[in-house]
Length: 155
Image 1 (cartoon, one colour):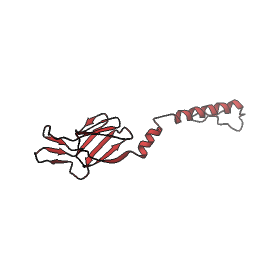
Image 2: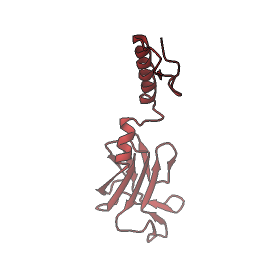
Image 3: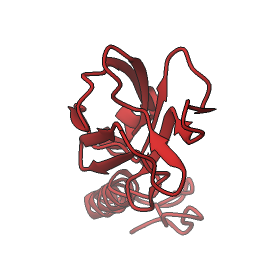
Image 4: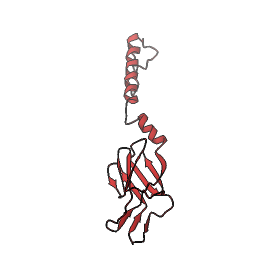
């Protein structure tokens, strides 16, 4: 005979001294416990995947490059970032060049929401631009010959 009382959440047997447990009672309890644990362990809302855990452990990466002077340059990262910030190492974010154009020494690129100009991203490949002429009074300065640049890429 199964127990006269059951536990609140899983309905497991909670025998009184006068109850007589049977094998089927233990089998049923084990099946309830196994089902509840499976439901919890496989719940991707309550638990992180290994990919998500790696993002928490290393939420961003930092790298640098030296400009080649070409109009465009591609840089490949080891992962596909959600957001990338690129900036010149030893220059202000924006400055004015000899022609009076604004020289932008930075760019922000988001995976699904575009960019600030001067750079673009497809998967894990970043393309940076070096302008020789101003467009709407702006030149991009992200690949100047021997220029030193930093990249912060967020997972």
